[in-house]
Image (cartoon, rainbow, N blue to C red; front, side, top):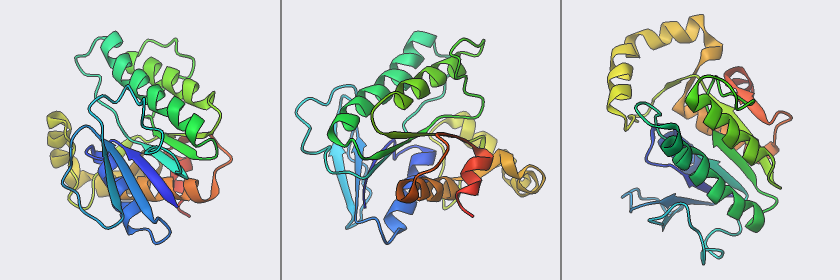
Length: 220
């Protein structure tokens, strides 16, 4: 299986990359990045692209994949809706439209979030934009899956790039085992998300929008 990953420098993306590199049935992992990451593996190929909204002339590099894991995203904190949408909706759909044309049989898994608003009309800005993004992906001619994790536990030395999130995880770390025990359907680890994405790539899923409990069920 050949997989393509966007957002490998983020917390979720790092976890997904780790699981892909560890999987015996994944023969190649290509990552689309703005600059070289320094990650090394015989399976790994980096596609450096400064402008993630434009893919003209890249058909050869973006063809031949069985699955795409789209983990690219930012926090909406302090952002105007137009700017957040330009990144969250614009960059995601720009890549997805090209990939659906070049790899119509691929599966495309998008990291959204718990509370995403499919109606696109709710009061919460990020949830509306995520909902709009999900709806656009589901309308494309490939098998698209929306992952909506809630609390994400970073494992294997992975850290968030967002300072506020790093502080949160550092303070919350002693409590996460209790949260996992008390609210198992509200928390996933970076390891579990990566393994669940691979499960979807291997066998598909009846649901196209997966909440935390649905993602966890893929691991059973």
